[in-house]
Length: 589
Image 1 (cartoon, helix red, strand yellow):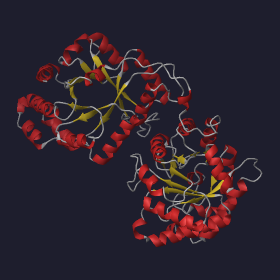
Image 2 (cartoon, helix red, strand yellow; image 1 turned 90 degrees about the vertical axis):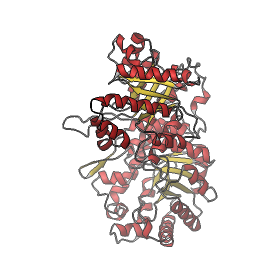
Image 3 (cartoon, rainbow, N blue to C red; image 1 turned 135 degrees about the horizontal axis):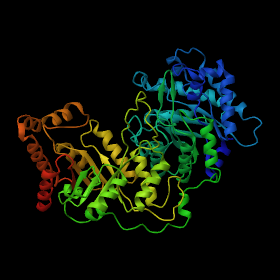
Image 4 (spheres, rainbow, N blue to C red; image 1 turned 180 degrees about the vertical axis):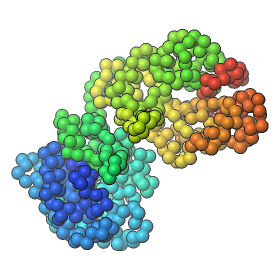
């Protein structure tokens, strides 16, 4: 079987099973107990789960041995023999494939030797000893391969591979886990993981757990770019939500299946599920890959006729192509002709209010618009329909935002549909520009969206914000607009961090109306920095507070010209006074 696994891996996409631990949890078992111990205490339940994955069409069954080494079992106060637990696990998985007239592999699941909380207190030789004992038991039980999974620290993964390779010559699949920021909990990138494993005897490399289908796609791309080895992906079914004593996962089977298809089209050799996934999710994967089981190494779209060229560039893209500083005014339009007078001669408006309001403003006021679209409370299909409709009406420049759901009456946790965040929305528009819909199907024509994303220079966790910004750029963002800023130091640091990325940035400036607003933003709103000087001047300004706020905004505009390609000034509160400010800035450049 070991030779057959390598052969099959090179020829077709292998579908792994889904979660074991969370399915056992749904069946009534606490996540605080040693779930592998159920191989001895409740073998019928474990067998039923294996058999359900076989019926769903899985090619590979993982043994119920995640955490089944003596150190992890001891953490849960479990005194049963680790060897007995592992031998029982292999026996149950092998029994589940009996009588099935197709090849099904049994993979021995091996976790990090200790939990992340205990990592610092356990020596490397103790970890290696526990892994060695478990691997030996799995091999003795008769597994066809080993899967080292959910390793958050690269040194432990390398250590485990070396230990396993010293025990057996069975195929080894080495899987790290990555956060939404694209790095392991230990801070390593997919390329770092590949580099560290490249000289070790692994049959394949993969990623599992922690993130859902969308974020796993970016991890897959990075792994595939860095290695010629087969790559596998096993995402969670989204982020968990605790309901009473139970954890539930939001990702529907259809959404999971759509991403499985994308994984295969981008070269994944192994696809399965981790926490929150069920036999239903695996059945959906099998159905989605039915016509792709011979492995594809390039996107299917490359084999079909190219869609027709896209229409001309957006008005903002044309402005960026010229050397002058770009000025735009942010408005929440009322749909009236006088809105044109609120733009201060900028001729470009960032519209808060939806595509319909943007179309109305363009037609009534004769200005170009930048439109915002949020991902929350709409499915992928709805989002695609909305943006295609906007494109048909001539809107081209779109800023993608995740959005913030409002509490719904007595149900603050009921936040509507949320299939993608801003990164996924950017990816949707980038796909439409490439001639593919959200299912990866080829469109008759390409769209020509100029795709923008929000960035917050004042975010408290600057590293996380930078990582997320880079993820947006990687997904297809073509320009950035900051959240409103009130000082330039954080903006300058962010620009410096992005110095290697060729992407234009617009700074958003919202003139302060007075001390009350400044104080509120400074002390009650997260990720906003109001300089002490601004607070002091506004506190003593009295009736001149609005004028002082405008003067501070003008000063920011002057300073920002050396840092960014343009600015967006919020004009909703003071259209008359800001008109002269915008005109003055426009004439000065």
